[in-house]
Length: 336
Image (cartoon, rainbow, N blue to C red; front, side, top):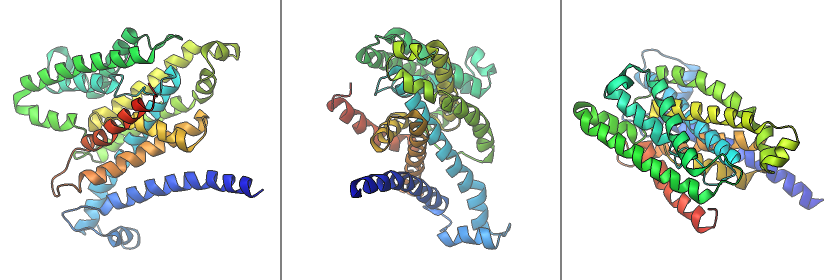
């Protein structure tokens, strides 16, 4: 009885710790590392004595709050996108970063920014969506990612090759850009420094649609984990499942890249942590992976402002420094 009670307590404690970690990071991010010497008490003053003339309250409400909300939602999007990719391909190393979805979105966004050919006429959201689609299609076509007998190593090699190609095109765009090269380079590092309420209004509607689509695939992904033949025999249309998952991944990734650039490795780290903390039910894993991704990006953004204040280190560099050794660890542990 004591063992059962301890297990039940642990299952209750884990989500509480996850939510507490996210909420703590969110609250600290509203006032931490600011040139205006913000304090926790300033947040309390907004609630009990709002003052539109108070510069500290205005900084929190107009700059910090939208940035923190966007950081959390982008992290949630990328965490869910990574889990969707791993669940669909049954490949533990699948992620928007490794499968060139991030680099594809970044490449066409860069071409759009410099006004190259017909890309300049495209809305930035559409350009990143098409780029994400291009990167994903190339990797999955070369690596045979949607076949039932797909090989994990072949997919990874295809991802490396396509990432290299798209990154080269992006660097070429930077050379052509000249005057705007610095701003594009900063964006390519994954930055939240330009986020405002307009960014939030762009992000949440598409994210909501994509997340609803993602959560509708949870039962199909659970059965897909048993193998395609088993899933088919239990009434799952695998083709339709693939279409929904791919569309959700493209939407979640492209809108996130449009606003903050390619923030890498979140879609790889969050799903693995979610599986380590929870069971293999995608109905649980999807929100858990999203919350872990949100916490990771939120804390990474806070850290990005803390390394060399008042200058900022792009948040994408922080997640890369975390994600690269994590990827090596997975390979060494035989996950490939």
